[in-house]
Image 1 (cartoon, rainbow, N blue to C red):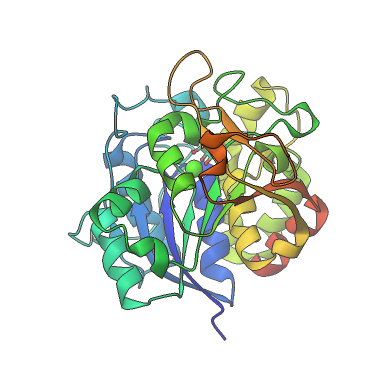
Image 2 (image 1 turned 180 degrees about the vertical axis):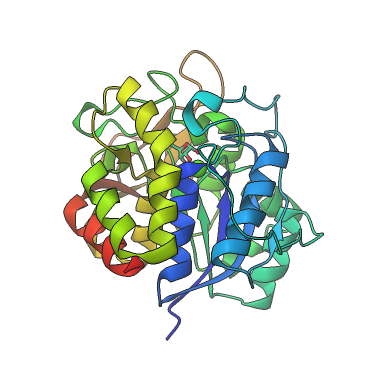
Length: 318
Ligand code: RIB
Ligand code: CA
């Protein structure tokens, strides 16, 4: 029985790809579409990768090309040292790319699909939030028609966690801080899966080798695509494995009981040395703060049962 109709808004991206395989395999997820966005690479590369991934793992799912740049500035510099020149770990690609681009812009695809399934669609966003902000700008009413927005992004200082592209900024927020502040301030249900929980959810090389040996083509792909990323993590001090950033957000959709959340409005700084810093004002905080108090509450993840989240991945792929 389908419990979750998803649009996957993504900048594939190695961890994006791993999260897509999970979604394609999970029995309670129906992928209605994949929308690409700039971020881990330019929009041509992320859209090509989305079409490749859809062709290999979800051939009936449409792919719509999204934003090539943030709302207010130029796109970020490429990061081939993290995701590879092709943004999929420079792996050898097998099979034909049969999935073509939908033809609609991503934000139009989001609007049309949400309107076709009022109250049922979850937007799972794991890149800069430009497409979602553009959809809100074109059709503000979709905020009342979306079931939930689940975002991989931000860092909220839990256990001292900082940003990963500056002391303040997590990459997806830094990719488009204006869009993030618009998305977190809109009147829809928003859950945020930040570095506070994704950096304690690590797929070790032994875990990934077990997935490789027990999950057929999908398992072999996850192993292959994670090799380049694992080498980058060693340079970052994670000596064994990779952070499960985007997969953690996908796991939240189907197993939120494995996460602890804190409620309260979230603002995103849009300029200065701390640009893209995400700041939540917990509902329990008594101090008046109009810049937060006028905004809706978001659910921010402050804890996770990482072992259970990883078990879910391994069991789903088997
Ligand atoms: O900070 C991690 C996030 O940035 C992940 O979504 C990763 O794919 C990159 O987009
Ligand atoms: Ca991503």
